[in-house]
Image (tube, rainbow over all chains, first blue to last red; front, side):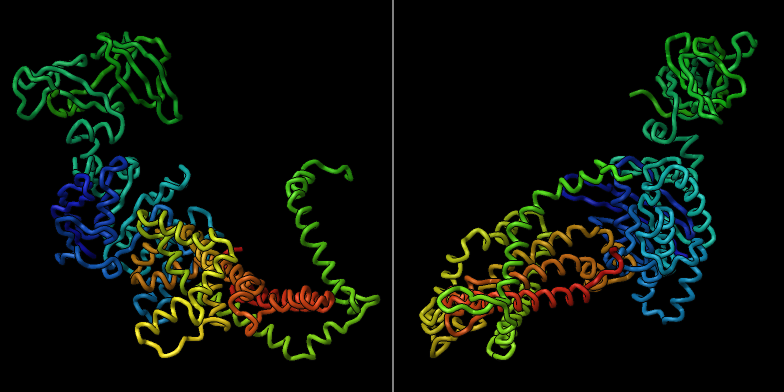
Length: 347
Length: 285
């Protein structure tokens, strides 16, 4: 197992840095996701870790050894590409054997290792097939097997699920995560899909414009986002504004105590996730802000409501469809004070 | 059941224009040549009455003609091989190189096709002749005593044919390489292959369809080339195409000329089929 340490890594193609002095320490066996919109530098970072791109500045250490000047083929990485990049002129077996042959592994060991890895990705019996004879999900698993069979120091995945349909994508999330845990390999996973990053990772690195906006566990990223950009990128969020007075922000939902150094009179932005809100019938007598249902979207397990508060502000609420409200209904919206998260003052 | 469905008629209509064109201007003349090759030689006329196998007998009994077929095939092989060796790196560069030179490179590759074949062949005689630019320059510098034999031999023909047919090798290979996903090479590198190994194990085999198409094109074109071999080979080195035209036009032996033409086509076709079999790609299908 390998610890990866990225220090002040920078990539500049000449039009300003695509990756701007980022530092990440990845523990042995950790699954880390680089999450961000396209152009945020996540793929460039992955390519630098793999060795496909030179770093303009900074260091990449595998177990303390700087690999910045080590060519791709000597870095001992396993990589899974977005389009799988299986060799179309080779059978599954030949694809899997390729990396082992490069390492001059004896023939019979190659055979046993291929059998083992095929079993691991549940493709035993497929070794004589050509890639074009496999479904997308099967190709994906061959690509994983090919990256893992060489027992690399680290596993790099570049949006590996982007080309799969929704159902298969969810299956593969679980599959890849389980496999990674069993093998215990240090993994860097690039994605623009926040749900993927959240469900699979030990920690998520959120990137914008070549910089790291936040590093944290999925729940840290979701519940305590570092700023407005992160909060909006990772899931839906209501932004509630209010003035600070005596470490308290008064909102339509009541007074919210805030920790942190905010001067009295400053206008704060508070993040409030849609599922943190509770909807109650208007005459229930509970505390809450009165609101009118503008619209609702039922998706089976959940209902999303758009509500208009008395002041005209619109909030989104996500609830279980136990009690349904119709469009135009008057409701009470209750938001527990501890579910507000300060994102900073309004600029 | 036997109502002609419009669905089946559609594709037929689409290929009809090309099929008619080929039928009238290729298949029918070819059949005419086949029939002609079995006719009796004529006295003062192109052919006489009746049919015979004698034209083929004459071909096989006279080693001169067999030798000419072998020479022609050799020129075809060498031209194809040299085009492949010279063309592949150019094709790779055009497909994968820096985009700034791509347009210029493309124009340069196509340039031999922009000049008429007769002019181009005369151009080569100016360069390759005993009093040509190459020999005079080399003699002038004192590098050689007498002129090098560059013309009126197979070498001159091959040089000129390579020049003309290079684009036919480069373009299919270029398009094959362009069709190879660059992430395949990246994947090979990530698995521990050097740049050279990744080229040898991934790019080269995947560009085989282009190599196959280019080789067949150049080989077939070389076998049937007439203007270049006749101008540069002169009277001393004759390829089959030149001999066929001699028989048809100079000595007016239509039946024998037809037999010669068919023997050239058949041997060429045999080699194309063998080559196709050798380079069959199981993974495509």
